[in-house]
Length: 100
Figure 1 (cartoon, helix red, strand yellow):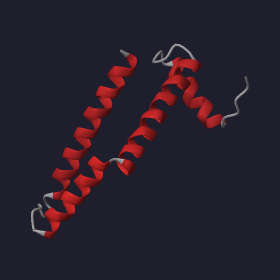
Figure 2: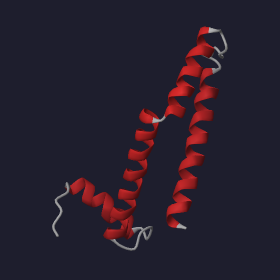
Figure 3: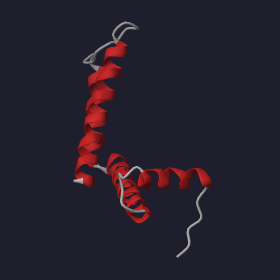
């Protein structure tokens, strides 16, 4: 089978193999497909899930009734740092699951 990729993408794939993080190009591509499937499932769940739609409705109701936190220029960076930290923790957990 033949696959065409840009030189930039090939370099990134090869860098993963050369670093020792992955034993072969095939494993890099397999992991990429796992991530893509995971992302697609997440998007589908986020757009089609009654649970998520309910959470959005609950959030809209909270906003309407004044149940929210207002952030200022001074406090907003702390919120962003917390979001970034939680996102990195989630990514680290997923990466550990993939590579064992």
